[in-house]
Length: 288
Image (cartoon, rainbow, N blue to C red; front, side, top):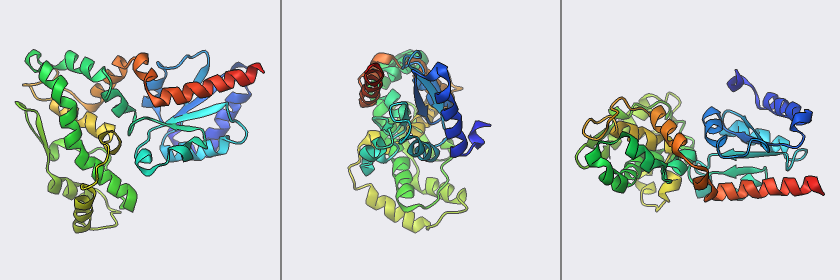
């Protein structure tokens, strides 16, 4: 039922936690949802931190803006950057004690770590392992960028395109020998428009915008959505020439990446350094 709570209800629940003696010396770390709880709970010391979730970035931002005056150094938040780094929003988010993932989201963080190699070792045909380790991420990024640009255009122009629960097999093609991945842009755009009853533009305008945006040199790690990447990887690993587990789906990919993501990988991130510095500030404040 938590997903149906309004931001004010969630704020009140966390305030009750803060008043409880058991949490008097703990930091409340707020993340976006249950998958983020699964990801981050293995990366922080549970003696010092209580992890809570608020479903959705907009609700999280609203809630943190309400916490900031009375509970600074008691409540911090981690949320997916999405396009915030491209938009230069990092410093503004910090004003509300919201800390962004280094890349577009936590899934991209995992894919950029050695977790991806562990996934490849576990699920690949033996003769494909070396090739996949050298090429899988690059090829996945290149194909996913089409979706990333469309998502960014939608974000910038509020076109109200529905990207949820896309069937990637409808617009994705792969050569299992070279792992060359192709997204059919025309088909993808038609699918997106057909499933978006509140779409505010036209196919022609969307394609025109795409042809303009593709000229920009966006950082792959910021423009690409991690869920698109893991969907593409799941599609690749449903090919019998590539995979030992042809019943692959996005949940299996992301679960395997979380399980193999180590705390040492996280310690190399800017996000870890930001959160750790705030934990140290809290500890110093309480000992004064």
